[in-house]
Length: 431
Image 1 (cartoon, helix red, strand yellow):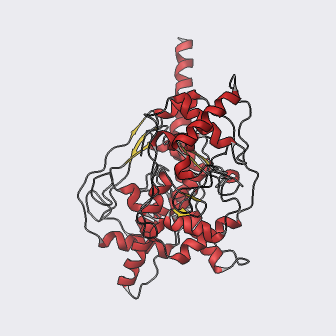
Image 2: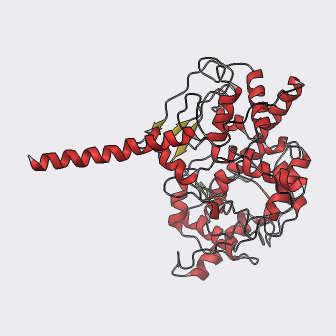
Image 3: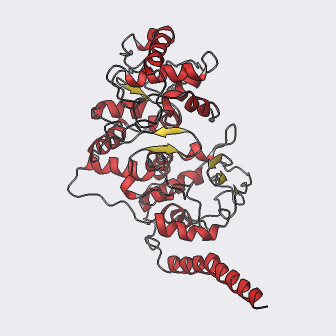
C-alpha cells in the first residue's frame, strides 16, 4: 500500500512539472508580453501600404513555406520535416474560417512578434518568429494588409504529426524560456542607414539564422553561434558560415550582393535550399536592399573557420585514392570546371580556392556530385548552367575519390571523404 502511494505521489509530482510549471510560465508571459502594447499607426495611403506589404512578403519568403508544392499560393499545407516530426504550414490567405481572414492587425503582430496564434496558443518555431520578432509594427501591418488583399483560399489546415511529447504545445513554454526573447529591431546609431537596413533584413524578415545557425538537440539556436553555419535539419545540406573565412571569406560587397540577387557571382553560385531562397525571395529585392544585406554580412566579426575533423577518415592508400580522383576529375569535370579548377566566371563555379568545398562538412560537394543541380533562374541569370548527376555513373568509392581530390587540390585544405559518407548521402532527400 505504501509503495502504491509513493508511486502515485511521484506521478503527481511529474504531472505538476509537466503541466503546472508550463502553465505558470504561460501566465507570466501573458501578463507581460514585450511589445504587445504597440498599436497600428494610421496609414494615409492604403494602396502604398499593400504594395509595401507585397515587397516585404517576398523579402520574408512567406510564399516559399506557406505554399504546398502544386498547391494554392499561401494556402499552407507544405510539410516541414523536423527531428521531432512533421510540421504543416498554415493557411495565411484571407479566408475567414481556414485562413487569417478573422484575424486583426493586432493578432497578426502578436504572431510575428510574440510567436502566438490568435487564440494565444504557442506557435511552433518552425515558423521563424525568433527572427520575425524584430519586424517593426509598421512592416507587420503592411504584411497584414497585403495578405488581406490577395484572393482568399478555403483550405483546412493540417494537424501537425509530431511525436510525444513534442505534440504538447504547452511544453513550448520551456523552449521559449530557453531560446526566445521578443524584441523589435533597434537601429545602431553608430552605423549608417545602409548597414542598419541590412541588419534588419538579415536578422528579421530574411530570418537567415534559421538555416545559417547550428541547432542543438531541442532545435534551439544560441546567440554565440549566430550565423556561424550548421547543418539544416532533415535536409542534409550544410548552410555555410556567414562569419568565418569559409563563408564570405574575402568576397567583396559587390560580389556578395550579386550572389544574393542573381544566384551567381564571379566566385561561385548557390545550390540546394539557398537556390530556392534566391529564386523565391532575394532576387525580388531592390539592388539597394541586396547590397545592404551584403554590407551587414561583411561587417560581422570574423571568426576562425571550423577546421575539418582530422583523422575522421584515413584510407589505407590515400595516394591511390587521390590518383583515382584526379583521373575521374579529368574525365568528368575538367571540361566545365577547368583542368586546374579555375571554372568559368558566372557559368561554372571555380573549385580552386573555393573554401566552402573544403569546409568542415563535405556533405554539399558529395550531394552535388551525386545529384547535380542548378543555380536558380533569376532576372539577373535567366538561363543558368547546371551540373548533371553522377550518382548513377559512379560508385560510392569513385564519388568519394573525386570529392576528396577536389577538397585537397589547388590549395583547398579539406580532408578526405569515405565511401560510407557517400553511401549515407544517397538516401538524403533530393530537392
